[in-house]
Image (cartoon, rainbow, N blue to C red; front, side):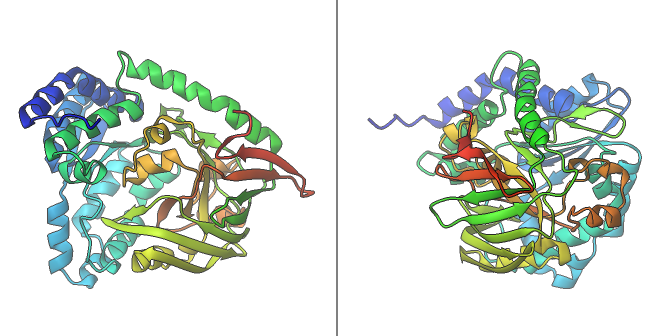
Length: 426
């Protein structure tokens, strides 16, 4: 029987009824997500539509001892107007004031909290070269900002907040008001923020990663082999000294934080020169307000040599052609189908959530912390050890309910890791 639609007033009251949970979520992001320390600067990036939640986060940050909070607002409509009215050349460089802002904040040891929430189709019809150029310029020119996160000098966290256009995409069968309420509920649930003590829940969740990481790190696999009925048949090599990570991250000075809330993945960086075969996407990829669907990539010697997409081919092409490293893999991540996000049976149209419901790969930048001694190496040393370097890092989902993954040792002998979309021991 179909559910009875909620009235707008019922939705408003229901969201008000979530107030304590939403406050606990704000505290979780400040205290566990970025592990804010006394006297530290917090940089908060947030959609202007969620100014109400931004105030909760700012309040939580000052209660946690923040010296100051800098808020950077985002807005889909302003972004679209900018892309519509500015030439491509404008996006090929980041404004000097923004370079100075981000680099100086990073150099001063700020914590960065990025709250995502946007219309998955906000930039539909926009020349994909423009957002690709903007992302490349920011990642190339804001070096202290980028390296601070990549090399463990700054804490950072990405988490979600609902906005109306996103909610309507996820729940098109409901009224806008009810869709927003349902997305709030779902974000709190999959972020383990719907209970009385989310911070303790995340301590418990973090402990659950340890067994899996011990298994993978003790086997020292030479490669992974992926297969599924959709045609995926891919072998990805792993570098000597690779390290599997997941759950909490740790800065060079020992601060524990959670880069993603939610997170369900165990991941490492592959050998950039060793990927051979073909892989098919299992979920859409949303990139800079544009959607890529039903795509595939063929690898030879670690490099994408061919690709295709039913929708968003040009977006995918610009991702792959960002720079020399964007044709190669920087991440392999394993995610069981037995997670809260997958069990929700919801397509979020947001990589933060969708990547935590499915095994995934990433084109572009690898992780220094996923190589023994990697955070002490420069970029040339990391390249020499097989860790990819790029100005981009784009996750895409490949996990299916029938996917099998095998760990290969140096002799080619196989150990089952995934059977039918879940850990072989589940």
